[in-house]
Length: 180
Image 1 (cartoon, rainbow, N blue to C red):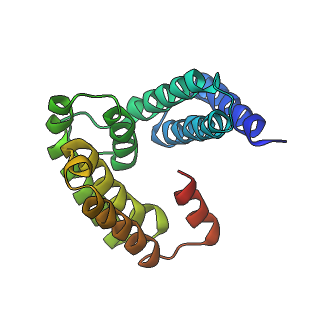
Image 2 (cartoon, rainbow, N blue to C red):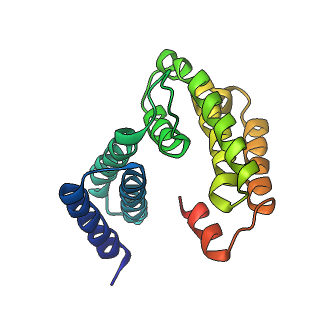
């Protein structure tokens, strides 16, 4: 089975599961990730000359954002779900205007603090990369990738390198982080 069919099958099964049992944070994250993977497959097709894939990729990214947002923490909410929130804000930031993006910086700082606390309690691959993800989302929201360019990018690369070397990360987990 090729990548496109595997991803489509995963999305269909997850969608049916959510329809039957309702959504929760884990299912929202899995569905968001599956839609992101579909967008990646469509991006590869687009880059290989299949221009029609561009609209499909945009739709897949929008559906990914929608899945993550379903369980993302709202501004000022007491309960914080950093994984879903960071993934939603990452995707949302790609099309939001600068003023809207800056409004969410304190929210990302809360997510970063929660990610650091989670990593201190359990230094696994997912908790370590959430810290780096918070740095990436911060850079997207505050525009520092535009203004600081190569320096900001080098800092983000260092964050991800630190995340993947400071935690117990299996080869499969490393591949998953890199693919996302």
